[in-house]
Image (cartoon, rainbow, N blue to C red):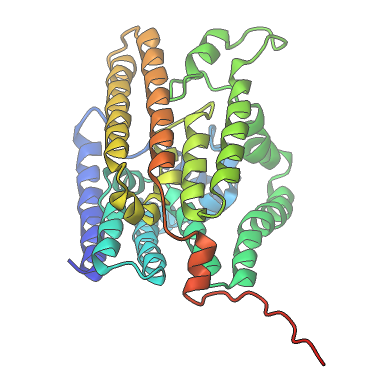
Length: 369
């Protein structure tokens, strides 16, 4: 199947899931729509009424997201989901273009694009109302410009999205509009956050047990910063020449060791996975990767089973859920190891750009007689 048909099929699948999600929300105990989407919508409602998005308790995101979702109030409650799904499909288009620039075969391109479009996680994340696809599009666009050798535009996107967008636009405009509450909820909260609610992170149970204790007591979740820093630094040093794969492994390590870990965080590294897939499928160690991926999926399903008993059945299974979190972390570590040992591309990211003429090294000056 050509990539154009894949893109259309991916859009159809997301449309069907949006309709199914509407039915499930109305009829079943377990809702399809992510609770965060309800928070986004409530925040947009406050903005539409001339208030602050932070009037909605637990809204701790950029105000820009609430502004983007004003269509939920003015047009239709599904506006945000449609926006996220459109970004999701456009991310697949960027993946296609990146692989074609590296002269991948049409089959390899189609397989990688399909791996993104029909991945159950990426499909459900966007259709349930989470906006991670917006971040994915910005990251892939930056890689696209880097690969083309357009370093200045790539740097501008990076600066505009990170420095300009966050610190100048948000920092100045949002602080002027919402005051200190903006800084507290959108930034400072995440630095001092101690979340006692259950998540995939192994730190949730120790935090739950110590929640409300003396603030001078040691916070074990601070260890997350150490493991995140060490793992991302080592991966960066070892794999810097293979930028998409390096970013994927760094994101995987960051999420695995984070003090809070939920399903939407998986999109952070899954967005880079299709770019490495053609090489991984040719690796003699691909069986190791498949086994580690299976372990990752099984331990995740195991965790979700205990989480269902806790959240929906009210059973006291905190200890078993914590053990499931530890198993899931072990599976993530095994997956990082399997990927790192299996990935052996012929050319580095820079070599690819040189080989295909997307960048040129400066020529030595001619010597005069």
